[in-house]
Structures are given as C-alpha cells and as structure tokens.
Image (cartoon, rainbow, N blue to C red; front, side, top):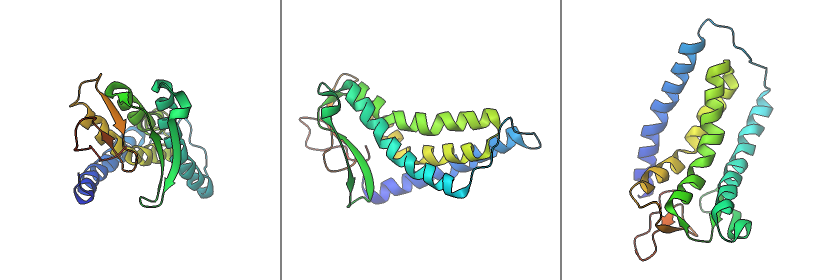
Length: 178
C-alpha cells in the first residue's frame, strides 16, 4: 500500500471509530456518576501518551521474544528518522500466527483494555487514552487483517527497514505497517 492510500484508509477508520467510541461512552455515562474519575493533570496525560508509545514497541518486542528462537536477542529497538517514530524489529522469521500476536498485542493491551475499563468505570481520561491508543494501533490492526490471508504456519520476516513484513520467496513484500 502506498503512503497516500494507507493514510486515506487510516483516516476513514479513525474518524468514525473516535466518534463512535466517544458517543458510546457518553451514552453509558450521561447523567450518571462515574465509579472512578480521578483528576489527571495535563502534564501527566501528555507524559502517559509519550510513555505509551515506548511501551507499545516494548510489547511488540516482548511478544516477538516469546516466539523467536533467539528470544530477546532476535529483537531490536530503535528510532527511524525517516518515519519519525520508534520501532521494534524481529530479525528471525516467525509463523504468521505468532507475528499476528506480536502485531496486535499493543492494540489490545494499551487500547482496547483501557477503553473497556473506561466504559465500566466512567473514567473520562481512560476513555480518551484508550481511544488514542487504539487509533495508534490501527496500522498494526491493518497488518493483522492482512495476515488473515496467509496460512498460520507460513513463516514470514519482519521487514528490516519499512513498516510491514516479507513473505520469503515472494519478491513483493507486504510493507503496510509493523
């Protein structure tokens, strides 16, 4: 997928997702007292989002390490000046089923779980955090969906320079997002 097409797809996902998630929260908590809704200073909100970006990559790395034969030695972290983002890379081939788990884990842990807790407690900041971290994981979600088209035991490689994966023996790499 080229950058323009990917951007269009992500925007078409982000806007309805955010509005639906926000609408659902207000539907559940309109004129009800939250179970828990502590005051969170703006500086702490900003810091938690920045920290979550690093934790997002650490979660990818942890799951890669669980499934890679070389464990944590097969995982590297860094900062891509070209993309302006932190990254995590696994240098060993993994079965699609394990790559999918490594790809979707941050979306679930940092996005879906906090969002679900916010719906249960009425905590406004947790709703915003969950929505933002879900949106931050949409690229991973797209890759997870793309991987559904491949056999679960097929071994693939994490692309070493671009966001995405490589199917060994196929010159066309799948470079949407990792």
